[in-house]
Length: 86
Image (cartoon, rainbow, N blue to C red; front, side, top):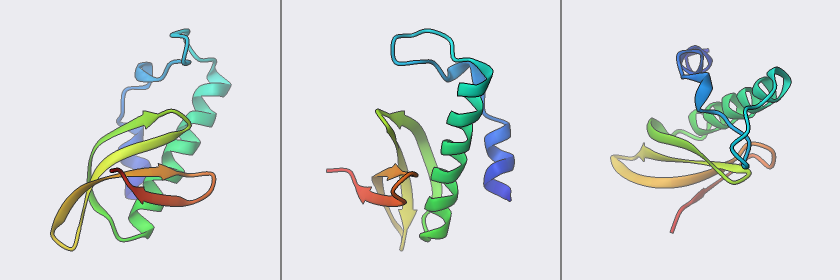
């Protein structure tokens, strides 16, 4: 899938534990899987042009385009919810 390929180009060192410690290989894979699920969820819900995609607590946030409008959303890949950020 295109999203998964784009994710592969992202810099892995940007991922770190909340306390700033480096993540283990297993943790990196788990976070990468969640990231991929979040990006795929955005695509499945019809959002395009994801920019500023970043971790936000246990979720992710991104600026997306839908219907010609640009706005920020929060993505929870575990619950498969995408909600506008106020």
